[in-house]
Image 1 (spheres, rainbow, N blue to C red):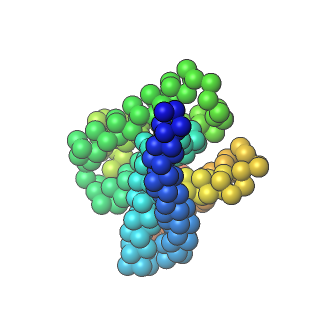
Image 2 (image 1 turned 45 degrees about the horizontal axis):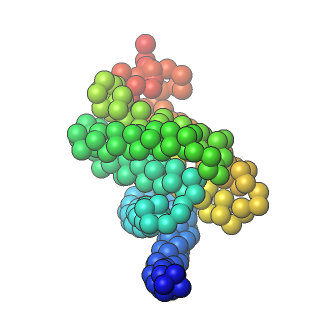
Length: 245
């Protein structure tokens, strides 16, 4: 009887193992393609039509990556790093898309519900990890969760209190959030391929992407100052960055 029960369990486990393998394959392929497409979109940053097209393709691949990661979380054993990156990558990708769609318009209540839901999921996940003795890296999880709290907190503050002051920052938001989504993909890729170098293989890609974000935002600030004929360091009533006073 016990042998029969084990045979049934083994038979049921085979389809799940195949589903898991297929899910991992789709996840890895989508993430790899997304990394390439993201670079192409960045290359066309000064050509709006091409940039928008490849930006949409990047979001499509990101959606597949997040979807397969969630499937892995729900049905299979997934690492803490994968779960927290799924929250971060999925949210900043969505929020970065919304930033360029809304521009200076106020975000919707649906956007805020998604923001609060992601924050709550991240906090509950962290609490569950602290209560268990699972294999997780606090430096990686805390830094990734902090990035998520930073972006989500900014979105909440902007929506409820500082929309008029921050609404002209939409392009900077788009740059920060989309490159953060790319950083999440790159960190997951390098953390998996170069697993023997953890946690550095997970952290260093984030450092590189943060420096890239700073560079591109600085470029846009400099371009805006040139277009408005103002000197950097002065404040403008219109943009919130410079002023003629």
